Every structure is written in structure tokens, then in C-alpha cells.
Image (tube, rainbow, N blue to C red):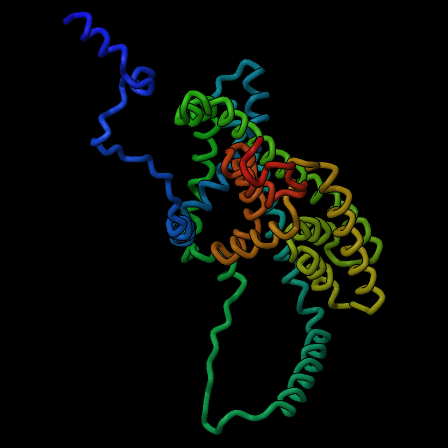
Length: 382
């Protein structure tokens, strides 16, 4: 009998002998279903991000400006630290040097503007004549256009340049209050630089911390290069413009030259903005020759800066294609006004660096960049 039982065990089908842990045939087993991507969540997430950026403009702008300044001042604070100064003393000295220089420049600019305003009555006759010519031309145009209905009055509110600059900040008191936080935030960011970086890296899983540390380092290098390059380019253009405007006899050439150099850094609008200061102060004895030389000088320096100086100082650290830059400027200008134009390029460059270090987002980073994506980049293959 025992022999028969043994024989029965030896006569089992080969499938059951090879896979003894399979469930009985009558038990249903659920098959794993592929994970489905809900594409509706992506627009909702983007909409939430845009809403936060729009309604929290004041807070986000203050934080971003503080981060930019902290990254720019970090080498100076590190230099003071290597001179055996405590970290908080080194950070305080760096902040004092920066805001002292900004205060001196602002004081000089205000004094020059006041002098310019005092001398404007000397040119009032010519200004009135030019305004009268424009008024006559405007009246001729109004005569050509069809008249509106009798008795109908249409009032359109025209936003001033202060409204554009303070978009989202409210009154001047709110602007001053928001700006007063920047020095303290920069100081605390410099004193807690190592802690903040280590804590930020610690937020990621262990296997991703090396990539996160590299990403933060590249963003810091990009921000420093961006600020330093813009400062060097503005000073270079300002010095050359000052020399040319001095030779042309432009009033206050030592002021409007550097003002033109810094205004030329504004993306897309820089060329137009840089021409306005010298033309405005020279309106008292402006001729077609003077105007032509001023426009030619500003245009030439702007072209040289875009095609020679920017690639020289920034290189591949800011490798954004023109379409991505244009869309970024349009988006951030819509969200934050004039401040959005200034912050759009570093924000977009930082986003591209993050995309380049996250495997699923590498195709988006390749789309923002100038170089063509390598084979397999579009499907996530490395």
C-alpha cells in the first residue's frame, strides 16, 4: 500500500512538479494592471503653480531677489571667512558692502536727476515747440479719423511706468516694507549657507542626494555667472557710452552713459530704453547728427554685447534657446510685470538645470536648451 502511494506521487504531471506553489485552477488570480497616466492632473498642477506665482508675487520676488544676491555675495563672504573672520561677521561685511554701494549709486543718481530737473527750464522753449509740432500732427490725424458720437465721452485709464514697476506690490509703503526684508534675508542666507544646502540635499532619498548636490552647485554657479556677467557688461557699455556721449557734448554724459549701459541689459526692451536717456538730456540742442550718433552708438554696443560679451562671460551656463527665452519673458512679464522681465532668464535657466538632472524631465530640459537632444533623450533613455 505504501508502495502504491509512492507510485501515485511519482505519476504527478510535470507542470505540477516544476511549479508546486501555483494556486488551484479554480482560484482566480488578479493580473497587475499598467499604471495609467492621468493627463488632467498636469494642467491642474501648472494652473496651481501659476496662481501661487501671481497672487504671492510680493513674497516670491523678495525671496528670489534675496537668493540671487546671496549667491552673488557668497564668494565675498567666503573670502572674509578665509581671513579668520567669524561667518556672521563675514556675511555682515558682504551685505554692508553691497547695499552701501547701491545706496551710494542711488544717492548719486538722485542728485544728478535733481540737477537735470533744475536745468530743464533752459530747454522749455524748444520742448514746447516740439510738443506743438506733435500736437498739430495729432490734430491732423484726428481730422482724418471719424468723429465719435455727439455727447459720448470715453475715459481710458493709462497706467504709468510706476504702476508697471510696482505691479503686484501695491503702495510705495508696501514696496519699502518688502525691500527692507532683503538685506536681512541675504544675511541669514549667507550665515546658514552650509546648513541650508545640507538640509536641502537631505530632503531627497539617499540614492538621489549626489544628483541634488550637483544640481544646487550648478544653479549657484549659473546665478553668480549671470550677475557678474551682467555687471561687467553694463560697466563696459556704460564706460564706452560715457566716452562717446562726452565727445558729442551730451549734458550729464557721465550719468546718462552708465544709465544707458544698465538699461541696455533689459531683455528685448534694452535697446529702446538705452536710447532714451541721452536723447532726453540732449533735447535742448538735439540735431539729426547728434541723434544719429547716439542711436548708432547704443545700437552697436547692444549688438556687441549680445553676440560677443554674453557668450564670452556666460558660455554654456545659460544655454537657453531664443524661443524658450521669449516665452519665459512673456510669461513672467505677465505674472510679475517689469520685475518678471528681469528675473525671467535666471529663473528659466535654473528650471532647465533641474530638468537636466531629473530623468523623466530631461526631454523638457533639451527643449529649453540650444543643443539638439541626443538619441534616446526623448524616450528617457540615457
